[in-house]
Length: 136
Image (cartoon, rainbow, N blue to C red; front, side, top):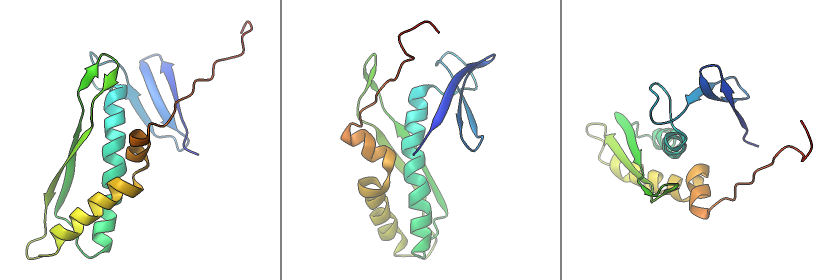
């Protein structure tokens, strides 16, 4: 099971995983924090890139540079339109097969292996659990 906690702190808001990693988050007006939408886009990019890089290298084609830009526009005040992932790749000099392997791996990761992308595309339900309806 994947699990994070998100809570208000004296300095704003923080998300933490069970291993102790933290990410500060807040509104778009604040500096040095990610907005929740930016975290969603980072999750899409991160899920893809952490699979594409090692799978491409495992097939003998270590890319010189691998980066991506992930973006989406709001189509309503509280709804994103399509998410676009744009890869930036520098292939190893003289490796004629690297591009073909990279493209095949990137498509396979997107279609079958990235949990975040697949969950968004399938419309994973989000449920909310509130405290019992009694005085806290």
